[in-house]
Image (cartoon, rainbow, N blue to C red):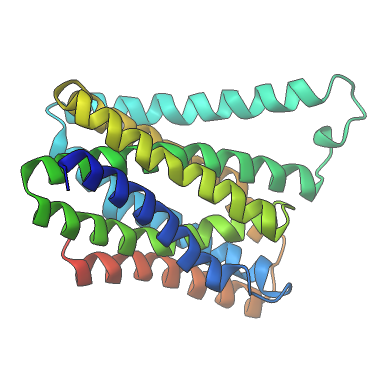
Length: 255
């Protein structure tokens, strides 16, 4: 089988398999688990950013200062994008988005996380292509590693989408569509690897910015609405569990 076919197969199977494995857990969660597992999602997002994505971006970049600036610009970009989404759907003072209405914030979280996940999946495709173009065995190992470390993050994505008001079917379809970015990144990288390698750190930084923004600006404020000691202990424990799952998967697969 040619290298291009290996890249296509690994990108399609890898993206779909990570989503479906995550769905086995997330889509069978009881309704009252969803709010609690948002805390896990926050931990998984921040863990993916600070344990996985940013270290990889720092390794690949020749200019860490520019990488930091890209993250800052990315956070401002996603803030502006969120404002534009609000403006597009509301032009009067009594619109629900002007009120502290939970559904409005949740819905924005779902849209924003899909943007960041698509960036991340695209970069995964570039990484898979680079590995296969070096050696087929290395490509297979790399694809398996990406599947493994994507699953905890995909569980978090499902929780956020369900928390945002999407149905289970909609959450599954959105994640599967987002996973196609892996195929796009892999195929484009095969034909233009040298030029794409130069922008991988930028794409990683933008993905990190989106995930940081969603976790810190959209999701964490919602946790403060539950102030009981029991709720706080549960939230902190699940955030730590989310971070730990990313750490353990990276430790096990050696990435």
